[in-house]
Length: 265
Ligand SMILES: [Zn+2]
Image 1 (tube, helix red, strand yellow):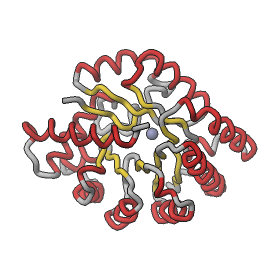
Image 2 (cartoon, protein in one colour):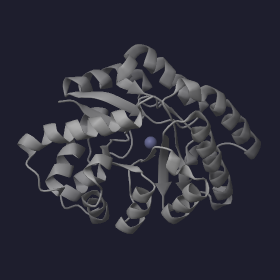
Image 3 (spheres, protein in one colour):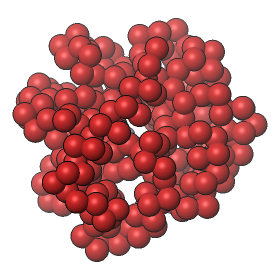
């Protein structure tokens, strides 16, 4: 049985130099495949460097992350999206992209977020690639845009899902896959995140994926790392009230099948 970290940032500047160690430690723990999430052009280049080292264990996704939209001017964003349209042939999927209307974000750039999101949906459709979604406090609007853009023809992957069950149903109607992160670990420990636990229990098993989002989104004092996706798998089984001993292998197999389907050429 092998496990997958469906969303991590080995190409993040903070850990890029240690990627070899992190992949080795993960592989020893039977976490053998990793989907990288793209944030901006310099980072896509680091993904390509990692791919040269780690080959098929890595899935590459290039995108302009909503937080990075804030770093660039409108004309720079336009240019980046043109580059993305060319570079995307070197990646397996588009993203992470989407909408983040969390209170710390800059509302004056929300329109730029919306535009960059729509443009990346178009790129995914043009190149027939899966679309990796980062959506925070913007689920209704995201669903609206996905419908307007007829994005249901794409394989949609919601990263670190944080919405409620009603919103989840809307995504599921569009055929979306739902990736759950360390908030499940907290939920299984009784440390809040009931909403996410409920969403998990309402997601068909063949639409479920797990991720760390490392090096971010750690759930305790230890550093978040791809190998720790095992804890997210375990937490899901606990929340589903399934036995760990036999459940881990079965869960690993279902998730692997789903992951292979999403990134099938
Ligand atoms: Zn991410």
